[in-house]
Length: 298
Image (cartoon, rainbow, N blue to C red; front, side):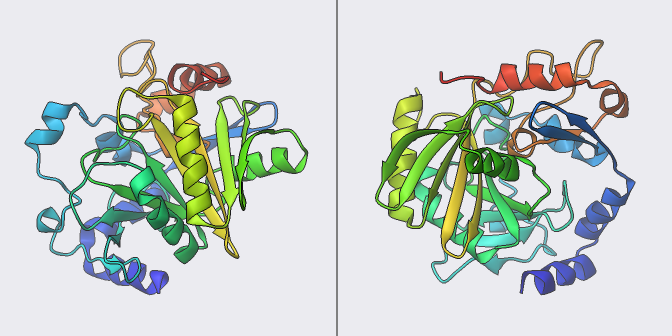
């Protein structure tokens, strides 16, 4: 069903087809670390997102591009499920082939806890995809409209790297409830927490406990989250954030045009400026993680 929907949009929506075709011009390279890797992607089309003005005034002054009334006529929607709460869209500015956006049908703030069941439903329905959430101030270019994104599995290294550490007994158990367990590790260059469970209620309870541990002056702590589900078992990885952008963010001398969201904390750095892509080093990556994420419990 998703493949048919994708192909139809490629035929009927020139903007989406052009965005997807531009992926063929990308350049990539990999940086190896102790136990994990980061993949670099030179993608000039993503400058729109990387350099987006996400200040409250800028968000309030523009039409919401996820609301049905403001979408291009060619952008069609596919219902996620029978609830009518979320619908699947093709992302016209993709990072990867078959990059999807899963948007709430109502214009409502970008929060995870109220829509966790919908994220799990998306991960179950799109079993071949990793579903991810960018918190407001953590890479979401539409912090005023609840949404997730999804990309084919295996493209973001973090879920498999975390799984390998868990299989080796190298993660710490933080909490457990019924059929779900919360673990964490800081062995991947940034603190990552994982809730593994089968029911939305148990996963949701541990997510709320994690949020309480992290603390927040707002409705939720700043986070990125990635989710995959297999045969009813879901694994939700949460990466707590300390800043929206690194100290050296920008395009001047000594700067790096990298604005971390779930894709970056998931292990793929999207770099829209070619010279920055060519010169970024492992030390730069670790600096971005240290600036924007945590390297131990806050």
